Image 1 (tube, rainbow, N blue to C red):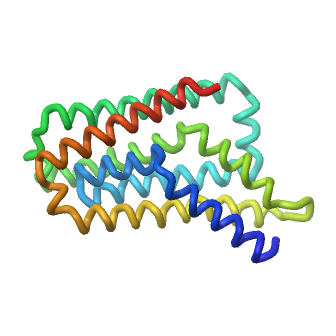
Image 2: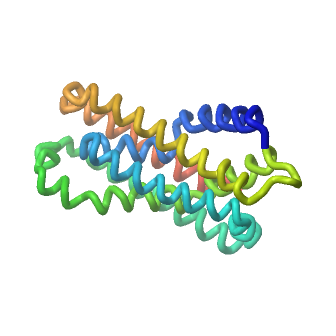
Image 3: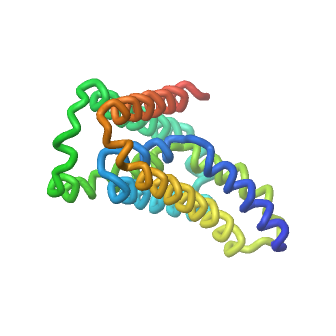
Length: 207
């Protein structure tokens, strides 16, 4: 693999990473309720899942999952249901508009595992992620490419996702004072929840 080929791949993946998707919305949802640290735990969960999916694709396990229809459909429906569940949670928060309890430090600490789990499950149950790896990576590989080349490309996708999510968290942190306003929080929760439900519905309806 040449550096020009890798640069082209990285540029393409950087653009895709910035496109709004379930991962972005899950990070934003947790950042709104738990600040930058809350979003960071969700980002960590997404990152671990992304690296696992990238490794599976590079080793050829992803192709087995996509070709075995019952497994693929099960993952798809689980992912769709989970995204809808997260979206409904955000919409309930927007409807109630009661954010005082979210400032409880002890509650924020106790929710680290939940935030990590939300990020991990939203990514690992999204078959679009493994399909992305399987459809894009081969275009940048040649018959002489090694397993190392495949892993490099797969991990680049995951790393670029982390970079974009950290940028998003930095932005949320910079405007945290504005986001603490009740009206703003309700609008953001409503928009995030609607987007997550929409992503779940699209995932479920796609062939």
